[in-house]
Image (cartoon, rainbow, N blue to C red; front, side, top):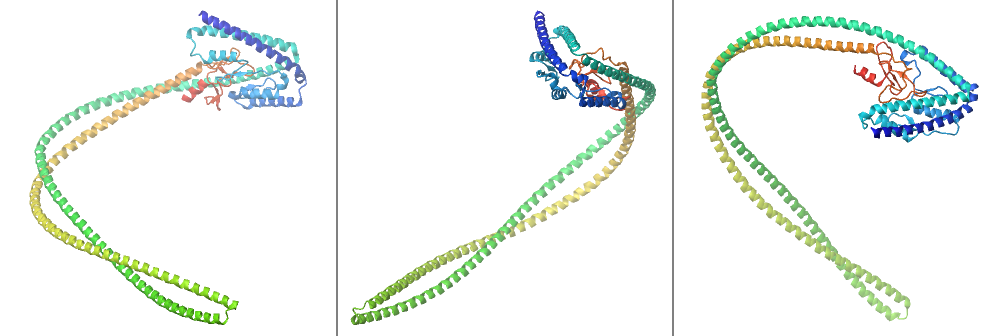
Length: 611
C-alpha cells in the first residue's frame, strides 16, 4: 500500500503540473482571442449574422418537425459559431480553418488516445489515462477504491481550478462576451426545458401503453392456465384409455407370438429340404457354367485362329501386290534403261562419225596449210587465220571428248542401278514364296484343330443336355409338392399378419394422440415462458427513470466515462434514461410508443436487437 500511495502522489503531482500548464496556455489563448474578437462580438459581420440566423431557423425547424428522439442538437458544437459536427476531428478541422486567426500565433499540440479518441496536451497525461481506463486487467483489485478516490479528488480539483481561472479571465477581459454567452445559455436552457417536457409526455404515454400491455398479458396468462388445466385433464383420461387398450394389445400379441412359434417350427423342416434342393441345383449350375466357360474358351480360340488366318491372308495379298508393283516398276525401269542405252549408242555412233569428219577436215586443213605455207610464207594474215582455225579445232575436240566421257559414266550408273533393283526383286520373291508356304501349313493345322474341337463339343453338349433334362424333371416334381405346402403356410401367415397389422395400427393411433397431447403441453409451456419474459421486460421498463442531466458530469458508459464539456455534449438514451456522450449513444432502434427509430446506448441497442 505504501508503494501505491507514493505512486499515486507522484501521479497527482504530475497531473497538477500538466493542469497548471494547460490552464496557462488556455488563459493566454483566451486573452488573445477575446482581445481580438471584441469587435466581432459587439458588431458582428454580415456573414456571421447570416450564419447565426440560419442556425436559429434550423433549430426552430427541428423543434417543430422532429420527434422527441431527434429534438436536441446532436454531435459536437463549435464554441465560436455554434455549428454542429458528427465527431471531434471534423470540429477541430473546422475550428483550425475558420477560427484559427482569433487565437493568434500560439498553437497547442494535442495527443489522441487510440482507444477512446480523447485528447491530451502531452504524452504523460495520455499514458496516465491509458493505465487508468484501458489497462484495468493489469491493476490489482485492492487498489481500485483508492484509485477511484484519487481520480475523483484530482478531477474535482482540476475542474474547480479550471472553472475559477477561466471565470476570472473571461470576467476581467470583456463583459459583452459574457452577456452574449448568457443569452445563448438561456436559449439552450429553454430548449432543453421544452425537450424535457416532451420527453416526459412521451414517457407517460409509453407508461400507459405498457400498463395496458401488462393487463392484456395477465388476462392471456389466466386463459392459458385454464387451457393447460383442461388439457391436463383430457390427457390423463386419454392416458388411462390408452393403458387399458395397450394391455389388451399385449395379450393379443402374446397369443399371436405363440401361434407364430408353432408355425416357425413347422417351416424349419421345409426350409431344410429347400436348402438341400437349392444346393443340388447350385452344383448343377456350377458344372453347367464350367462347361459353358470351356465352350467359350474354345470358341474364342477358334475366333482368334480365324482372325490370324485372315491377317495372314491379307498380308499375303498385300505382299503379292507389292511384288507385282515392284515387277512392273522394274520392267518399266528396264525398258527405260534400254531405250536410254539405245539412244546413247546412237549418239556415240553420231559422235564417232563427227570425229571422223573432223579428222578428215583436219587433214584437209593441214594440206591446205602446207600449200599455203609453200605459196605465201611471208604473209601474216594467213598465219592469223591459221591460228584461229587451230583454236576452233581444239575447242571442238575438247567438247567432243567431254561429252563422250559423260555418256560413258551415265552408262555405268544405269547399269549398276539395274543390277541392284534386279537383286532386290529376286530377294523379295524368295521371301514371299517362303511366307506363303508357312501360311498354308498354319492354315491346314488350324482347320484340323477346329474340326476336332467341334466334334468334341457336340458330343459333350449332347451328354450334358440329357443329364440336365433328367435332373429338371426330378426338381419340377419336388417343387410342385413344396409349392402346395408353401401356399398353405402363406395363407396362415397372411391371416396372422392381418391381425398383427390391425393391432399395430391401433397402437400407432394411440401413440400419435399421446405425442400430440405432449406437444400441445410443451407449446403452452413455451407460451407461458414467453409471456413471463415479456412481463419481466415490461416491469423493468416501468422501473427505469429519466436521469437528471444536472447530476451527471461524465458519460455513464463504464468503458468511456468522458467528461462533458461544451464540445462533448450530453445525450439521453430513450430506453434506459441514462446520459451518454455522442459516440456511446450514436445508434438508433425502434421502440414501442415511438413512430421513428430513437437514440439508444450500445447496451440497450444489443438488448432490443436480441428481443
